[in-house]
Image (cartoon, rainbow, N blue to C red; front, side, top):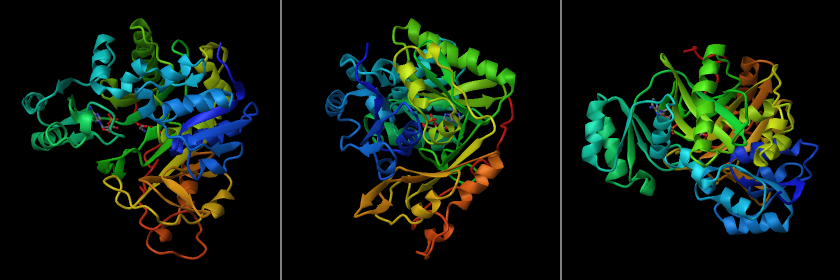
Length: 446
Ligand code: AMP
Ligand code: GLY
């Protein structure tokens, strides 16, 4: 039996995904108070929510806070605390927590471990090799014909992946990770993977380790620039729902989600929390590009607003091992689109301190929500403070309408000049993609 007041929730995170959680959990009639550690300028302004100045890796202080404040459920937003065992620590203290243990979170925290798991359980995935030195990397790159994907083994905020067109490009990436140490410990070991082709799909299963409930299927846009060009980022936009044929859905559930949950149970570390399957729908069926051990960012921003189920009850049931009692329902008549506004220089660097304009004007629009991430409050004004600054989310009766609404909420004039009376949100130097959800609503079914 876990302790705490079920109405009191602690969200660990300060990203736009944490803001989305605070927004949607705040709507729940069963939630009375939400603490967000450390939160951001946006979470502080949500009804029922307040920020708590504790960092996501300060696990001792987070556990102490949850005990002192009678927290009934803690929800972990980012991957780093999961990888070092925040969930194990909360459970040891008798606290209900939504997320996997460190052993289960290896599905994300070690790409090499995850690939070996996929082989053990025959989960469809690309050919791959693990290399700790350049000679081994080069042999694998040659074997795959040059066009391949080079990945740092550990956590690298979505940036430790290079999709190479040639052996030279792949070798440069492998050298940067293995020899130059550009990714620190995360790059001491690299994966060389067969390069798959096809549309990508994000599949999230909320699970207690045994039962699971799927969030609406979503698509993320990872490259910085239009037409899927430029470097990989943490995600520049997303949309949901994505529809696939019943046959593809069957292959996803029977070929990926269920064997993964079963395999994790059989190996003695059941996965509870959100199992995120990043898939590519190839000509020979869905294959796993990566697993993540948490909700997606920016997918969460478009999935949660489509739920008609009480999110707090869903996450509590998953955390307490009774998900079999709770169904997940979505509003089938709604679609959501998220466009990320990133700061100048992202992803290599990020300019900070630019005033964010138009937040009040957009807050009055129906069906539009601006979620904050890399922002901070300075003397009552919100300014940029990180790479991905805002997630502009719009909901409407169709994907096209949601898309139009999201773009209409961005005042592109603010990029270059500080115009008066902005009609939407924005800030100097902002970068955003103009083609989010363009190819929707349906990726080709493989
Ligand atoms: P990851 O961080 O592993 O999700 O990789 C980031 C992005 O790189 C993915 O969303 C894909 O667009 C691309 N990618 C990763 N692995 C592969 C692969 N084996 N084949 C093709 N593209 C890939
Ligand atoms: N959207 C990809 C991720 O959350 O890693």
